[in-house]
Amino acid sequence: MVVQESMSVQKKLEILSDAAKYDVACTSSGINRKGNGKGMGNSIAAGICHTFSADGRCVSLLKVLYTNECIFDCKYCINRSSNDIVRASFTPQEIAELTMEFYRRNYIEGLFLSSGIIISPNHTMELLLEALRLLREVHHFNGYIHCKAIPGADPVLIELLGWYTDRMSVNLELPTAESLKDLAPHKNRKNILKPIRQIQLGRRGHREFLGLPDYKIQQPRLSGPEAGDSDITEIIASDGRMIPFRNRSPVKRNFVPAGQSTQMIIGATKESDYQIMSVAEALYDNFDLKRVFYSAFTNVNRDERLPSTEAGPPLLREHRLYQADWLIRFYGFKTMELLDEQRPNFNVVLDPKCDWALRHLELFPVEVNRADYYTLLRVPGIGTNSAGRIIMARKSAVIDFNDLKRLGVVLKRAVYFITCSGRTMYPIRLEEDFITRQLVALKDQVPQGIDRGVTYRQLSLFDDVNFQPDSRIKMQQAFV
Image (cartoon, rainbow, N blue to C red; front, side):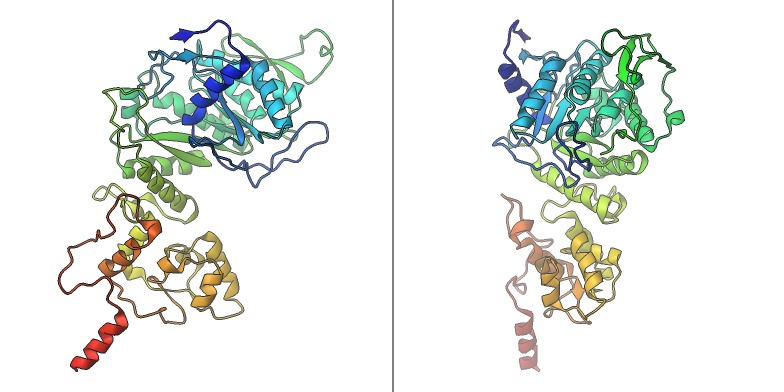
């Protein structure tokens, strides 16, 4: 470990912002909060505007670690305790001042704050809590804040942090408990899921179901100008620590109003896509998560216990998981429909929706003038917006293919699966091999480095990918 006694804030920012690039959390804010005229900033529900740097980092948020020091030795993490790297730590005051100065200069729209574990989870959480307290209560910052909760920390601290943040997240790290035990032996699934459940129940407003350790709120015992402030309280945690906290009712600030998210590292262990998506679906169903982020594994430590990524991180796999995640969250799909134990991984050539449609051709073609909303969503090339427009437009007119294009339908994919007034756009063979070859020929379906000639079966002399249906009809008429 390289320790520097004196380090400028600029140098700390350089080290700790670079160390934060492995945390994936660039998402819309999910919270609509106007300026109150007393503080600085607001948060717009439309989302944080994203700008990406050359190495892929989102720089619309001040995205930093509080510290890259860590007592844990997770095999996949660049900040693990056994790595000999330059270590740096901010102070709560530095975090607050950096955020305010960057915001005043219009460099950022909010703060994303994570941290390594310094001394203990409780100690780390107290430092994060103090930084956010300074921002909210001293600097009156009203902008967007996303903060990572530390698994294993006192539930009281997690509860308090939830009143200062807009979004919280607890990283699941790896898809299964077995993988976590192998690569992150200091962590366990129970400690990770406990704060996720706590945040979920806290958001529902059911304090009695949180299962927090007993604590009590005492009368103010502060001196100075704030001694008479009735909002100031001291919370006694389960281990006897005194935590000053300015009590705020949910009317003034909601508890984690933008919800919570988590992140899984993809490709560091041997789980299949089916296992990964099953875990994600369970998190959405059982913990009310807003987002699950998938981070393609990069072997930054060059550890022999980890898979090699010399050919690059599995970005295509990450992309397919995000596509499937979208189908589960907004399109009504279930993991069991997309994958199963016999087909545990996604198709590298086709996106999950097209792949599903090709395996269920008995459900197609869909008549766009009669199909309900959820049936339309299952058609490749039709999204949530275009499906809604179709439902509205057909109330006053019969829709044809020209209308579909104006309504935002991607016809180059949808044309094989739909009819308008009982007719296809042109003669089409509703066969898996034929449609697959046409879809693979599309530029947006073929990942870089994959041969465009790949099909589901070997071509014979009687197959021609450029063979036009109308020419076949003419040939048949000639033989007759």
